[in-house]
Structure formats: structure tokens, C-alpha cells
Length: 183
Ligand SMILES: CC(C)(COP(=O)(O)OP(=O)(O)OC[C@H]1O[C@@H](n2cnc3c(N)ncnc32)[C@H](O)[C@@H]1OP(=O)(O)O)[C@@H](O)C(=O)NCCC(=O)NCCS
Image (tube, rainbow, N blue to C red; front, side):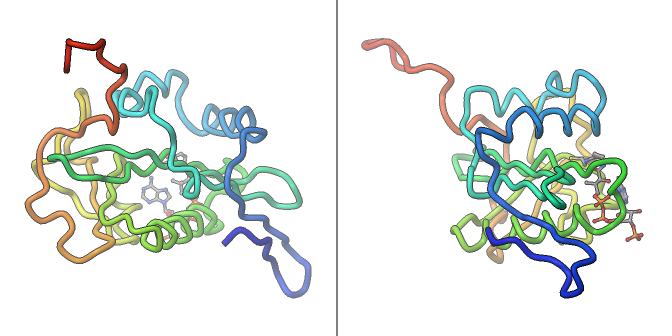
């Protein structure tokens, strides 16, 4: 999954790699380009604040070194169970519709399954994500204001969402409670 790949005829050469610290500004700039300003004010970002990404699933896709598409994942919890929060995924506006978003989705989800993750959640457009097997899930509540119709789920293991319902919570507490004052 980490090696470069491309056309046998050298028409296009892509590199699919895990995001590194050195990529950070470039990746942020691509997200800024693809999403409305103030994207980090979205409620889903509150679930990410202070929580480390799932590094092996955060991928960059470059063509001849130029960043074309990115995807990131964070851990969250629902009903005390581990859940992968997919996103954001973004493809450079000049490269949209070429299958790069689909490639990142499929590669990262395959890797997530290989790493033992069982269930995935995202906030997004059902008409796009249903092709990867996502469906609208009831009873899994993202922090407001989130349109419940945009809360989508995927099972990487059959039955993984059965009985898993409730508010979506951060994967780790923001602060370690002082001694004698447990959360
Ligand atoms: C959404 C996005 C990631 C898709 O990546 P992409 O590489 O452009 O998409 P792909 O080439 O894999 O797939 C193209 C198909 O998806 C469809 N599609 C793209 N965005 C869609 C959307 N928001 N809703 C429904 N369908 C969509 C296209 O119409 C096309 O359909 P077709 O296969 O029937 O022709 C990309 O367009 C993007 O970065 N958009 C801006 C940021 C964004 O909205 N991110 C997703 C929210 S987390």
C-alpha cells in the first residue's frame, strides 16, 4: 500500500503514502481549498481536538510529487465501542472525478480492515458514499449541529454496528483529571 504505482506506459505516476509531519501544511492547504473557510469550526472537529490521528490510515496521493488527494481518520467512541471517524477526504479541484477519491477510500478502508477496525462513521453526502457500502445510520448522534441524514456508517466486520448506538464521543479524555478528582 505504501509503494508508488502508475500506468505501465508512464502516462501517469502516482505515489500513495502515509501522511508525514512534513506533509502537514500542504495537506491543510488542500483541505482549505476544497472546503469552505471555517471548516475546523464544524462540530466533527471537536471530536478530533487533542486526539491523535490514526496515522497508518492518513494517506496522501501525489502525481509526480504534486499533492492531488488526501484522507485522514480519527478514533472516536460510540456506546463505549471503538469507531473510526473517516474524513476529511479531499481531491484537488482540478483532479476531481478521476477516481482518486474512490481510490483513497478503498485503499484506506482495506487497510483499516486489515488493522482490525470493525466499524466506520463519517459525515457526508450519502449519494457519494453509498458506493463504498455506507448507509444512513439512526441513533448514532454526532455533536450538534449535524444533519442526521449525513451521518453514515460502514461495517468492516459483519454485524459490527449491531447494538452500537448513542452519542459519538471523543476517543480519549481531553485532560488527565487531577489526582483525587476523577472524571
Ligand atoms: C467528494 C470527493 C472526495 C470525491 O472524490 P473524486 O475523486 O472527485 O470522486 P471519484 O472520482 O472517486 O468519483 C466520482 C463520482 O462521484 C460523484 N460525486 C462526487 N462528489 C459527489 C457528491 N458530493 N455527491 C454525490 N456524488 C458525488 C461524481 O459525480 C462521480 O460520479 P460518476 O462516477 O457517476 O461519474 C471530491 O470531489 C472532493 O474533494 N470534493 C470536495 C471536498 C468534499 O466534498 N469532500 C467530501 C466530504 S468529507
